[in-house]
Every structure is written in C-alpha cells, then in structure tokens.
Amino acid sequence: MHAESMLNKITYYSLWFLNALFRAGLRYSLGRARRDVLLRKMNYRSLPVLFGERVNLEFLTTLPWGLYLSTVDRSLHVKRIDPSTWHETEVYPWVDLEEGDVAFDVGAHHGWYTLYFSKRVGENGCVVAVEPNPDNIRFVRRNIKLNNLKNVKLLPFALSDQDGETTLFVGRHSGGHTIMSDTRRGNMTVQTRRLDTLLSMFNEVELLKMDIEAAELMVLQASRQIRKVRRYIVEVHREHHFEPLTQLFEENGFRVRIIAENRLVACARRD
Image (cartoon, rainbow, N blue to C red):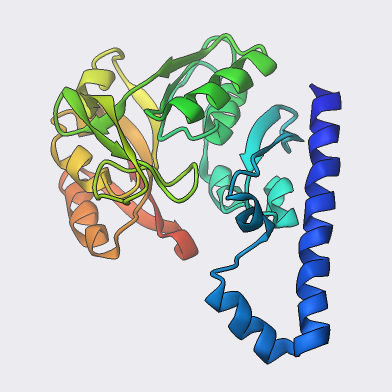
C-alpha cells in the first residue's frame, strides 16, 4: 500500500509539474491576460482535461490522529494531499466523543469522519457509516480494512424521507452526488432509508454528522426520533435551508451554532 501510494504521488507531482509548465509557457508566449482568455475558451481547469478528465490518483494519507486515509484526487491541486487544508479540520474539534459512544457518519464519502469517530469511541463504541455511491463505498471499505477497524458498520443507503429507492445524481466530484437535483452528469438507482429506520437500531446516539448535498432538511423534517440524537453536525448546502433547520432543532430542544462559516456547518446540541 505504501509503495502504491508513493508511485501515485510521483505520478501526481509529475502531472502537476507539467500542468504548471504548460500554463507558464502560455504566459511567456502570450502574456497573462491573453493566456487566461485562451484557457477560458478551452474550458481548461487543469491537466486532467487533456486526458479526458480520467486522472484518478489514489493516495494513502496519514491523518493527524494516527490512522490512514486512502482517497482519490482529480484536481491536481497539491494542497489536496494535506488533510490539514480540508474544511473538516474546522469541525473535528467539536466532535466530543467518548469511549463507548454511538456515532453516525451520514454521507461518509471516503471515511474521514468515520475514521475519526472510530478512534474516539473505541472498541466498546460503534460508528455507523452511511454512503450510497458504490465508488465511495469501496473507499470506505478499504479504509476500514486498512485500519483494521472492528467498530464500524457500513450501510449502502441514501437517507431520504422514505424507505425504498431513488435516483442518485452523479456530482462533479466524488463528494457531490445528490438525490435532490439532476446534475446532468449521469445517475444511478440506490436504496433509501429514513433516518428513523437507522436510529431504531440504537437506544441513544451521541453524535450524528450529516453531509448529504442539500437533502438534510427533507431528511430531518421526516424524522420523528430527532431527539434520539444528542448532537448533530450538519453541513447546510442551501443557505435558505438554514433558518427552517434551526427552527426544527430549537423546537426539539437543541441549541444551534455555526462552527464553519465558509461551508455553513451547524452544530445542534441537546442538553
């Protein structure tokens, strides 16, 4: 795994260097303004465009708390390799989990929060990772196996307002898949579950993190067991959803505060 990760990083930096060289060469020959006009006409964002946007490089990153995260990057922005640059680092200080707690990672993506929650709740705790996209599920499974985690349950569902099936629309990146609007990038049929269906597995849940690409209001409004969770961390994807979400939480005895304004991440706590 480490050898594979090193090979990917070498490839990654090589492509990044070619991308920088290409842009610098255009700037030298055309000037910055004319180069930028040309790149906009080409719809050029980074080198993967020249390869049909099929540069998918997998990386093994050591997380700050000692676990490994296998993930994929298409952007050729080198900062993506460093997890300290990700917005999740603004959120995880608010994750006050203890040994034996139950935590949900809804919209698990590649498992960043899943791994962190698993580390915090320990062998006697339980983490439920919920992720509908098959490619992302593969990464979560790989990261569970990579870290030999025994306290994680992975559920291949999308949360919705009813149990059944729905259409999952493919996002521009691996964290952008949604059931809420047609992205015109393809779609697939996935199984859905109501939040209450999953909460019924436990008597009490300490923390539920939710990042489900604008479905959060629909899912929470459909729940009749919202108070079964003591704390929520919710990424609000549509600004006009924030007020009704706040009202919903406050009506159920939660106090709400924003903990990452640039991504509108809200923390709701019930005393």
